[in-house]
Image (tube, rainbow, N blue to C red):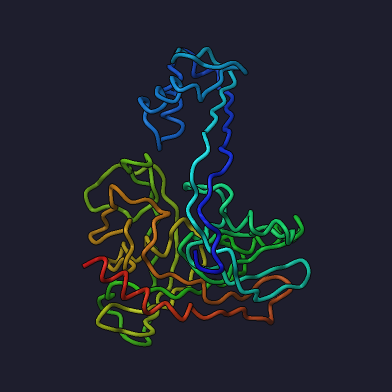
Length: 319
């Protein structure tokens, strides 16, 4: 294991608790859980019940049964192996409360997607800081954290669509048709929730084929072409909204997905085997401005120096 990385390790498992509503009376436990947690179907929930992973009102649930409504269900997820992650970062700003770091690619911010203890939130515990917002696991760059709840609440508001934060990213994408050096392009298409065979529903671009849509969120991105190579375009992307996977989705909506993105593909398609936490793309939180107490300070951190080689490697994998 190279220096600066936390080795893969087993965690202690995870416990989920649910209070069943009265309206669920008569529905099988496995069916209710499959509808609530769409990453697993009813058959898998039946297997978990048979393996003794679920409690019903504090007692082991031995067999699948119909709900009465009002029960407390508890699922104890067994320990699982978390992958190796970077465990070091560069501090960009620290005033004793506010902490801004240069998050390395590959480090998840919050628990989820197969990670529990191998996260930035866990690594930050000795500092007393917690994340204010969330970058994707394979998005590097400016990550804002704070030590007090008051500061976290204040800054969290600034990252919302009506906040004053200006977020600028660098991204490598497939060539964007019609966009030339120095030109800007505004993308205002909605981010929509679409079916996915592994996760049930997933955020993505609006499909061509009229597939069902569960939810939609307005989103706004501004693109500027910084560099054009044979491999693809290096873009400056400014966002005023912070929708899930917004930049990845907007570029896929244009027909120019991020190079190496395993999930969001050409023709607004979504891979049936990939998930949002899979890496391979190059996305970097480059600049932040317009934040409380720092309105005169523009935070900036350039993309990692190994970015170009990683880009070439991801393109080779695609071919």
